Length: 309
Ligand code: CP
Image 1 (cartoon, rainbow, N blue to C red):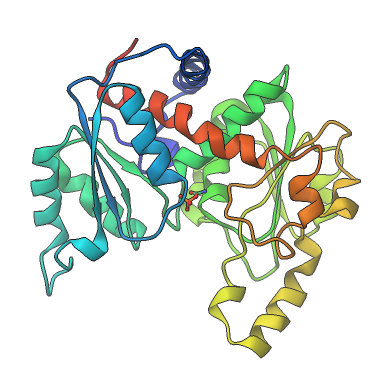
Image 2 (cartoon, helix red, strand yellow):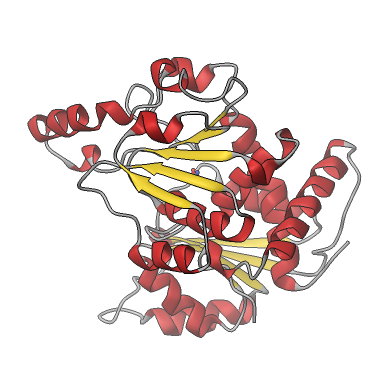
């Protein structure tokens, strides 16, 4: 059975390229208001233990447009999960018997893996601390749409590590894209993802200098800073000051290629990891990127369910 627990579950470049072309086709069909009922008679379940403004609604809309149905279970509406409550493996078996695929945003990646072990249907990671494959493949699609030679760009990721940063390691391994990451000195990517990318021959550099990472880049991406929000005000201010040089702003972007694309998965904390000017600037594709979640996830679900148009 095919899963999408991390971006490394995409088996090869040909599959990835097929998904990008299929997403483009589905996007075009939707713009033309033509029906593509490939998921007719299929039900996609969604188990969300955390909030979502993009992943959940874009999957619901995308499945509906393909003629399928969705069942959404938010953690607050379900019986508590865990060994002292209903074991996750029991809930996974039950939910898996109702649906053809399950998209889950769990509190931990370990729980996502547990769900995948017991659900008996394809499981899609709807974001975890380890990866955010739906987002990462959408990011690549957004570049694919706009660049003549999308796999030849230098891609810079600047800021705190995140699931999308880890997922980009898989994208670099699959496509040959040169990936330069600039992270704070106390920050670490997922060690397993980094080792896996490197052993696959990915061209990845990990450093601490944002200007060096961005110099000449055709894509500059970042993600929400997660650590400041978890701190009390004095410590938060100190953390924000330490992160300041990783902010995507006009000064940093002046080192990128003239036609560089600026990506942000949203939600953005304007003034933290990215400025208002950079997010709203001519080079930003953040809102097109958010819109692209729909067609990319449609292509992913078709692939996982073994259906095609
Ligand atoms: N980028 C992203 O996954 O957004 P949500 O958290 O709103 O789903």
